Length: 388
Image (cartoon, rainbow, N blue to C red; front, side, top):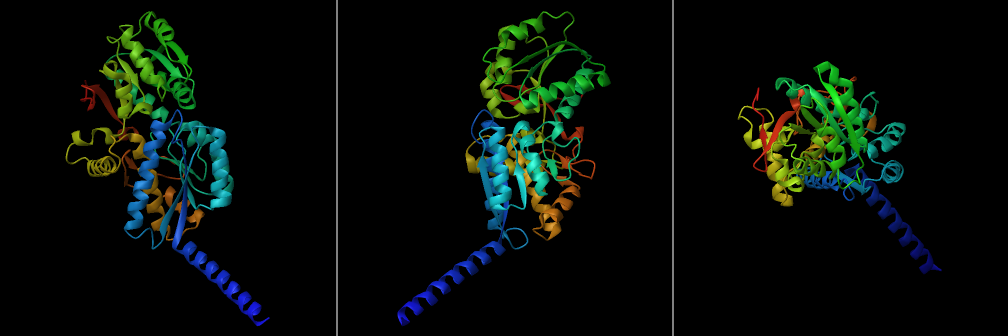
């Protein structure tokens, strides 16, 4: 009888010890979540995002964490599936009890997750491109990449300088491609642009020759713009060259701003222009550029850790993570509402995508100056000189 009583006391003490240990662990850490497309058709976006978050959370924790707490990063891979993304978002809220979220690789997965985080009142910093992520403004939703509307405006600004006004569009029907096409059509009149041809393709299409032939035969055509991401734009670029359309200026979007696009498109990418972040041309920036230090250090750290070339997509994750971390420091709290308020107050944050100044009416905080117009020459990114 005595031994049974002793055993019960020991078990109770053990349970109390485990509970205390768990409580102490919980007090010393803070969970942040992420849902990324690490595999699937958008893996070229999600993989560098995943590697960036893991790399820098480790660095932050090694340096002592945030306000004395270690970050616990919980990542799920949605494979580019919007339904899976929503399921994982719910899990982050209900099971993992994260205080904030940095993720959402694509526009489609992001839009599926927004209601979950809005309802839970947990700040969500998306890594997706479409303007609809932050327009209209939602209280708990922010994002780091330049918008598709900004990409259209930057491209049209460059076309206007070249006195090219009659434009053909060939757009992906994916969430980003469709959204950017709509934005380009919407803002074209503001820049004196006339859309003289308008074709599209499915993300699964393996040849866009038919659509490009129609565009090529359009009277008065002066330039072509390809809103899209994934492998589609690389196929379009190869088909463009095969049809001998290289004499017609060709623009891609920031949705292809990684070395993998150049590798996939090969020699056909020569001469293609696109708006992108300074990260891709960090070594070519003047010494007094405020972003030079940030993009150079990120590039060196990422490439040393992964043995892979840097992409703007990993840069979006870097910006999202550090906007969150700085907000947590200012809030001096793990309360999601207080963190949200500080994210919205972000001013003068120098990231890989530009200098961020958010406000209650702007949950992106970037203007057109954050975009650089690049041209692919010799298989590499080059800054387009002013007026050229």
